[in-house]
Amino acid sequence: MLNFAVLVNTFAVIVGSIVGMTLKSRLKDVYKKRMFQAVGVVTLIIGVKMGLEANEFIVVLASMALGGVIGQWIGIEERIGRLANRIEKSEGETHFVKGFVTATVLFVVGPMTILGCFAAGIEADPSLLLLKSTLDFIAAIILSSLYGLGVLFSALSVFLVQGLLVTFASQLTILSLPQYLNDFTSVGGAILLVIGFGLTEIKEMKAGNFLPALGIVVFFDWIYSFFV
Image (cartoon, rainbow, N blue to C red; front, side):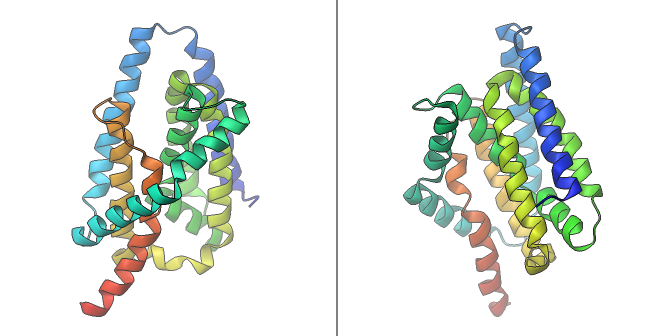
């Protein structure tokens, strides 16, 4: 859990969030809106790029559909939101909750998280996670200037998720194989698209409820491997 690269990534989110919250009071609403839209558009672009990595789109579709149903049934985003409510001691989807959920999903979904944690855990190579730390630092500045304190607390999610992945990296190396990683990346891209739609105010959807798809796609690819 106390891996150097994970600590750096966590610290980058914390510092970026503090910088963003400091800038928040100095920005006019019209500028905040433009930044909000910029983050959404870039998130959509990244989501499309990642989504096109798929080996089998039918596997990605089935994973997203089943994952979304399971996530909705469990109420994943609502549970994350309630956790944020407890931290803030509030009720409902406040700005804090929105920031916490959005930043948590954005910072922990994606191949850079998976591959970076594997490299750090198995090969003791922190370079990919350090690169991700730089990107997350910039994203945290922008997101926290829009959402505030909730983004800062998402650093806890980064620490826990990446720490666990680094710790158990040797047992999860199957995800680094192209036949699994590509579809996993595509599902991650689809989830980022859901986030991007919300940020650009095209369509508000609960991105957190699609998180089970990240596990389901690995299982479906394993099943699919017996038929090709």
